[in-house]
Image 1 (cartoon, helix red, strand yellow):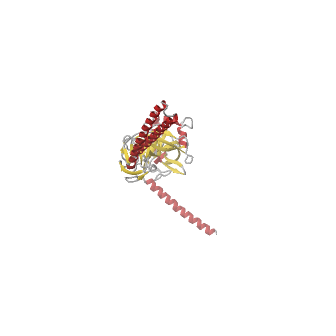
Image 2 (cartoon, helix red, strand yellow):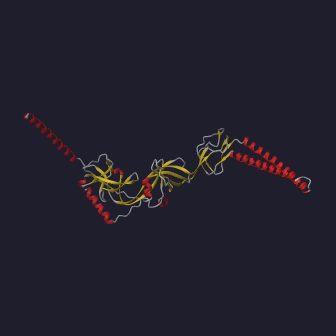
Length: 402
């Protein structure tokens, strides 16, 4: 047993010796290689305006469903899909033959009723003269008066029927109730339609609504935890931007004018609307995009999102330490971000140098690099940092890089 233990120990020592020798060789090779040159930046305080994106669907502020008010066959479609029309412009014509005949019949009925009224009036007047001369009885006179009243009622009924017939005839010409853009037209000439048929949707697109949803947390933030009303919060909100489906930013700014005061129980969200001007007719109902709501943050530390990596839902970055070695640092970030940068709440200090290149790819803990300095992230209108503070941060950065 002792002899076997001695052999095993000798084998382990031999293996370890080989390993140590190999490690020394690799160490020598690393020392001979030049440290990779990677981009770094100095963390600085700045003012930041970050935009939070909310998926949105666009619709005209006055989308009108065009439905016929009578049943009949379409004889003429005067517009095409996507046409821009003015208020009162003719869109569809429905068969008018029977409707015109109904008008003429009603006109004839009115004429007959009017003739009956004239005759009954003459009889009543004559009977009044005879009554005054005691030639006829009062009851005979009253009978002629009742006949006159009946004739007048029939005339009123005929006139009402004529008005209805003319109204139905006018319904055969479907016009635009508002100016706007014509949507899809599913019914063509010869199609039978009724009041339940949706001929098209006319979108009044002078101004467009971007409809989106806010979370319960968003609503609380806007109202400062309920300290002010939604109306007050909306009045102080900044202008918002619209990112189109192709990624472009719409050239006109919008304004949030409506936030629902009741949360959807199934989604926990509140519906909101932002109005955008549409003078060029570029926006259409049904378009999708993102409403970008800006939020201003003062004296914050910004780092690029590409400078971070994640482990078990925790954010990390590499700080360039002594001898230009990388040191992993756990950081806390604000929930708001613009998709490019993070606001660092804790874990970093102004003046420290962080790695912005190769994070999550080639950078490793303890790795020695050759720093390539870039400018700190600056907002569009950054807050001026005192000269002394700037010098101190620059000195610290240079010291850390060395």
